[in-house]
Image (cartoon, rainbow, N blue to C red; front, side, top):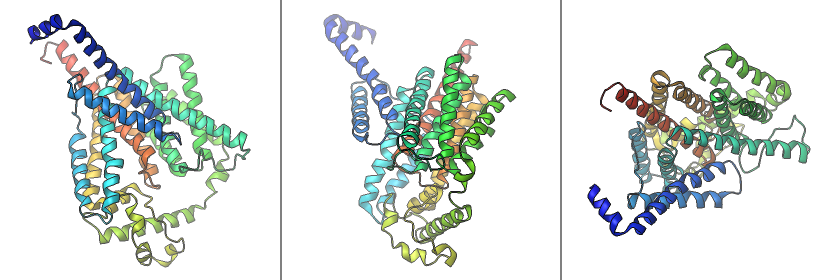
Length: 426
């Protein structure tokens, strides 16, 4: 093998060097393109930039694989549950009420992000690149939030009692998904950072993100974020004090009372019951295979028929053509089987986090296991009360799954290295 390579170099030294340089350039360009895609994920009116970066990176990856310039790893505990979920989602297309919409969304909202998942896990597969990816998300989200706060309250002149919304194209709850993910990543970076000046920057970002959540009047985001205190790596009272102090400052600065009373809690519960019971009635008619993977299929149903089955006190809110619970959303689109497979994915995700936290080779990896478990719980709480399956939060969820796979692989690799140091076979 080495003789063949040496002969190729001797016969075509210039071509060998050129091929090597081109391959190296293409390989280095992929994380740059995907990094730009991730950076612009929260921003409106950037679809063209994101599409160009995404598809160009996919094309480059295919070229690298085809010409064997880059090894591509698929190993992850998530492979089996995700494969089963994809298979069932594909199968549901043949029984879907709206096949065209299901085919479109099967690619756009599933396959597309599975491809992104494997690109992220193969091109951000080191500690340095993992931290870089997390800081890219933090910077992106911080620019969005700081710019949004300045524009909303200083340019538009809104009062602090007004419900903060960055832009009309996405609900405050979708923005909440991005914000809580950035918050948990920032907290993890703060915890692992030794540079005093960077710590100050991270504290400022944390406080800004927290204030924006309170000003947006999103109960689910605040509750989800507060739950992370029970998971995140607080192994001493100092960090617990810092975390709770940030919450206290954000509460004092934000008009807490007015924001949580902006929507009557009883009305909110009644509206959610209206939506969830309507979805449940549809599930009863399509229990196994669901109505189809398409996100828009729900709205094409005769919802009035299902609305009439509700108790009279729930009917007064009218018909809302969108599930506001990610569990019911999966169940109505893919049936009970799809829901079981969805829970299988979540179980494996938390199993990976637990193994990293309990058996991690060092504190850096253990902290990342806690960080990602906390982030997923915070996002899931939002998903239990709001629609979450749209492109921006899907990129966030895909990134979380990618990060846990990267950390899992790094932990396995360090474990093999340690065994090798002790004289055991690697």
